[in-house]
Amino acid sequence: MDNQEIIVREAVSEDKKFSIIITDEMASSAAARGTGIAKRSPEYIEKKIDEGKAVIALTKKGDWVGFCYIETWSHGEYVANSGLIVSPNFRKSGVAKQIKQTIFNLSRKLYPQAKIFGLTTGLAVMKINSDLGYEPVTYSELTQDEQFWAGCKSCVNYDILMAKERKNCMCTAMLYDPKDHYEPEETKAFLKKINRVLKGFYALNNGSF
Image 1 (spheres, rainbow, N blue to C red):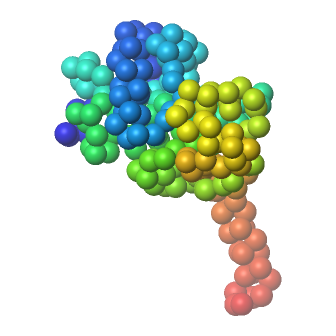
Image 2 (image 1 turned 30 degrees about the vertical axis):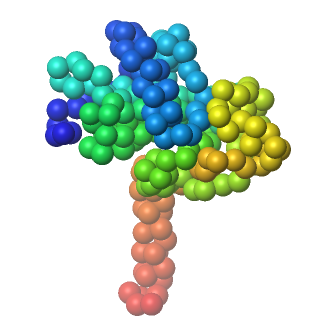
Image 3 (image 1 turned 45 degrees about the horizontal axis):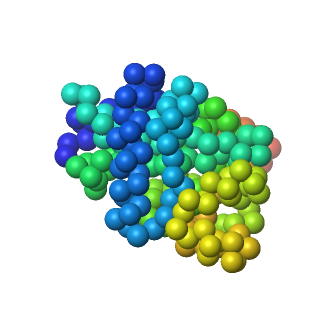
């Protein structure tokens, strides 16, 4: 499928009409993979859209393609880009990467100081996360907010998680810490400062090192 036919953007109120399709596809995808995910209701998806914390992908004709939303934990210290789902007709088209990039940018805009994390069993998602700057971490580096872990109760692997005292499970934990990364403008400013220092050093040494 030509990605030029797909529009990825922040979700708006009108997009709530896709909430049942989205949650049904989330459940079907999890069942097909044989792995568990925290179940979400259409009402929960609609709430995320109303809060301005969701990204949706549509064809130019208005057909649903994919979705992802933002969750916050520990008073905004941690952010999760959750519920990534793509319609079967558009998988392996690159749209998942577009959605992840867009929701990542939205997360950075809304919560610039937050650590962004994810739990996933999907190798494709791990690759996308890695490209965005996420790194594999232990579960101890994630939020310890009880509400977050309560969301795992509907996962088929919840008993495994609890048996291992929430130290690990079937999912791989990945984390993006903004303190470990320069933003583009910060990088430019840093490079300008280095250049000024080097020019000064060069001048003091009569044009030679």
